Length: 100
Image 1 (cartoon, rainbow, N blue to C red):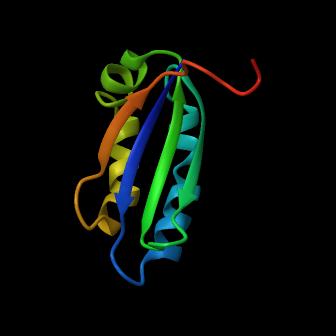
Image 2 (image 1 turned 180 degrees about the vertical axis):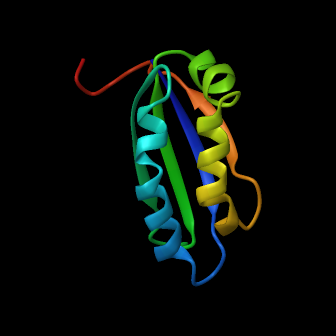
Image 3 (image 1 turned 120 degrees about the vertical axis):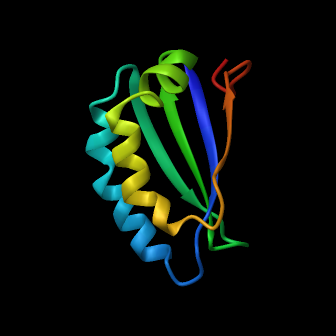
């Protein structure tokens, strides 16, 4: 399993609208191949900055399946108007946890 981490800066004063758009977009992710869940985090120090952490079964589920689908187009239509700039995205995999 991999985690996609997208750092998203939203336009000032649009935070609540962005959060509402991500709420609407839950179904878009749910229809996506290999999707395993997501969390949206908001920065305390920089309240216009968010980190979207999406769990995928494989890297290709995000980079090929999702990115090449109508789901991605729908996602960007819902949330894209709130972006200051395109999100910075990276992928991680767990190498160590506190659980063992």
